[in-house]
Image (cartoon, rainbow, N blue to C red; front, top):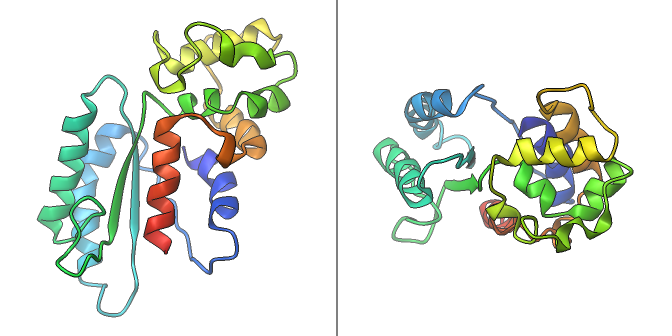
Length: 196
């Protein structure tokens, strides 16, 4: 996620003057464990700094509604209003977003970017059963992406997707407005609202 956001955020933010810091917690479990303390730490700094937080997490096999509710509760306990639950003036400091099922679904949401990053991937992939709805790719999103890339002649000896490399390469070619992943579009809307 960090590698993709390093490439995407400057384009998504455009000419907005925003100081961005990406914090990689290493795993979903660690993020959920560390988030309460991290968010609580921001509360004391709000008097002197305009801090806004965008939390992005893979759904994996979790129930999306329960995972979102968990993130919202963590922010509420820290005393930070969210986009879903702003304060009485409509102000919020946190936007919680879920990549469904995983970040790799965002790459399936922009097949042209995938084709540009990895020649040999068929541009008609988005029309095939199982790939028409990127957030509904079954059987493990990164596993499916590895299969697609291997069929196109890439990473044939790999047992696992080199996620950082793939994220950087595909994100370089992604065009946010054409991405058909609903979770990616929700991410973009949340980011736009957060920096507005």
